[in-house]
Structure formats: structure tokens, C-alpha cells
Length: 530
Image (tube, rainbow, N blue to C red; front, side):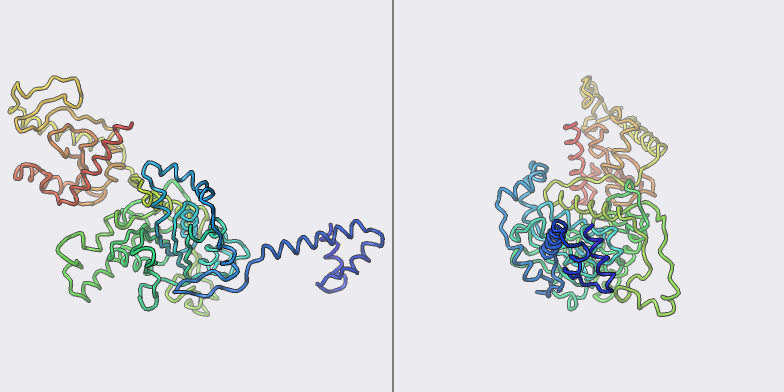
């Protein structure tokens, strides 16, 4: 009611300024109650605006990082009492109690590159969950079209740098800058040391290396440069692929870069990484791009090794195409419409939920790793029932052949009549177990997808080649914690090594063998729990 009176009074006189005396005349003499209500409401509105207004000036850069301005610094230099901070993180602390993970999370240092729909949600949740130091890198500003997917930006943030906007909002979550250090950098990562400055350097006074790097970049060359930089230095990376044009949350997976075969961005990044490796090989003359004869020093192996680079991606096919180039863009030149030189011009269709889901997935994986409680993602590709059945039958046939070959060597002394399934069967003089397979066809999916993630445990090759389940330790039965998924080539070598070396495991590279046996041990622990 009051707003309508003020607005009509101003419009009727052809001006935007409001004259209290004029309004008083319009309201009538003697209506003191309405007049008091008007003045009080106006004063309250002004006080609210002053209290919630944000500085309009942009902060200056400091040590390649954009710092919050002096007014904000005065606001945030507050110490949270330990009991308040402890209660804020109490639910997380309960989750990580078994691994004593919260102290590690609170002392961790994470670099987040890219603060759009994906990266803003990741940084937001890392800050809420207690990560002690977060450097947030992005050259771009909040736009109106950003508001459908950005984690914290509002209408009044439009035009401001994403890094600064995110830092401002996260500071409101934890005003104690000793408990949460926010380091916003308004700059684009290029891979050029001179242009990037100290952007990639960890805070030397706190740590010597990043605990984790989150890649939420949507530009192929920049993304590949960042992954290559980290792979060469042994820095753990969790990277997100394309979220545009997709909406199905059930198709989001975590895997290595090669397994993300259905994501066009992942395909382009793999190609760019190979190009960078070949260029480096040519420039330096290094054999196969290795620093030494050890295959673990081969940085391009990050494509197949999710312990170096883990990928969050969607296997859903893109259901919405890029926006068409307009006549205006054609006339004025496409180079005039990109946010930066050599960056994508056409607009991606984005349902705001998908970047949020992917960003939260990145944060979940990061927190669990930092807290010493990592999870093992399920394999992305489900295999059909017929494939699972064939794999099971192949295992049964393989075990029968082993039994027929060795049964004649079993004596009465080696026979076992125990009712315990673990010992039911017979043993040869050299200790080899021969007996029934201790899984059924329904167990095959768990072994393939959850235990081995549909990849050969020896070579790392994924689906698309003939696979078999092979008993790893022949002194034990064919149970889930003793079955390894191998491609046909690896099976042939494994069997040859049994004949020549006395144990097929001895022919497996030491580091690979350690990982295989570690995963089998985890399977045994899960069996004990459930």
C-alpha cells in the first residue's frame, strides 16, 4: 500500500525523487498513523539496504590471488570458538571417526580450477565440510545465464568475478580465516609459467604440494594442460567431463579417462594428452616420454590409472545440441564473441541439476580421499545377462580342465571330507586346490563391475575384448576374493607362467600384483562384514 502511494506520487510529478511533504499532502492532513507508518517503513528499508549492501569496487590482486577488500577483511577477522566449529563439523566427524579423518581434512590444501556450475558446487561443499585451504581459480565473471547452475551466485553478483563471489559467500559459512583460508584467483590457467605466475604453486608456508587438484574446466586445451601438469608431478587429480546437454543422474560414473568412452569431452582430452606427450617426446628426445625405464614414470599412463586421474562423467548421450551461430556472430566475426581467445563460442544447453550433481560427486570423492575413507566406484558399463552367464560357464569349464589334469595326482592322504565349503574338495601334492566353483552366475556382475570395474586387472584394458575369470591363488578355491578378471592375452601369459615359473602370479609386474592382491583383500574384508 505504502509503496503504491510513493510510486504514484512520484510518477504524477514526472520525477523519481520522493518528497515527504508531497506525500503528506497526498495522504491528507490528520492521517498521522499512516504517515508514521510510512516514515518508519522507509527508514527500516534504508537501514536494511545499508546493512546488506556489498562493496561495488573489485578487490585488488595480491601474489597472483584476488584478495577480499578491506571492509570484508574487517568483517571476517573473527575467531570461531572451538566448540562452535566442532559442532559445525560434527556430522562429518562422525562419518570419518573410524579413519580419524577430520584432522586431515581440516589441514588439507585443495586447488579448484574452474568455478562454473560444476566447480562452484565442489568448492562450496569442500568449504562446508572443513577443508582448511582452498584456492579457487577462474578468470570469468558471473552472468545472468550463470544463475541457473552456479552454487551461490545471485542477481546482485552478475558482473563480478566468480572467484570473488564464491569467496564472499563461503566466508559467510566460516568467518574465521584461520579455520578456512580462501584464496580466490581471478585468472585463467594457461599452462604457461610466465602467464600463470604462482597460480599452481601451493602456499609454501603451509605445505610443499597440493593434496588434491579439482579440474572443473570445460575447455579442452586448458583441461589437458592442467592434467598433464599434474601427471608429470605426481599430483592427484579428480576431473569432471561434460555436463551440458544431459540430465539423467543415474548415468553419472567415476572411472579412469580411457573408460569414459561415451563422453565426447573425454575423447578430446585423451587426444590432446597424446598430442602433448608426442610433442614433448619430440622436443626432449626422451624414449616413450619416460623419465626412466620404470613404466610408473610414464606420465601418459594417467589415462588408464584412476589413482592418478579419476574422471567423473555421464554415459548419457547428449540430448540437446549447441546453440546455432547467429547471423550477428557471422557478420561481426566469431572471434568477437568468445569469453577468451580460442575458446568455445557456441552456447551449451545446460540443465542446472547436472553440473550440481557432478560437482557434488567431485566433492564427495575428494572428501573421502582426504579423510582416509575412499570408496570404490562401481564400474560404469553393465554387462548383459548372457555375457555374465558365458563368463561363469567359462570359469566352470576352466576349473574342470584343471581338475581333470591334476586329479590323478591326488592320493587318499590329500583328500578332504570336511563340510566347510572353504575346504571342500581335494589338494594335489603341490598344494593346488581342485574342487567346485564357489560362486554362481549372479556373483559374476559383482566381481566384474564392483571388484574389477569391467577392466582386465593385469593390462587395464576394458570391455570390448574377450574376458575371463581366473583363479589367482591355486591353493585356494574359486571364490569372489580369489577370482581376477583378465583379458584373453593376459590369461595365456598367466597360464604359461604357471608352467614355467611354478606360479602365474610371479609373471605379473610387482606394482600391479600389489594392487590386485590389495583389491582381493578388500573383497575378503567386505565378505566378513556382511
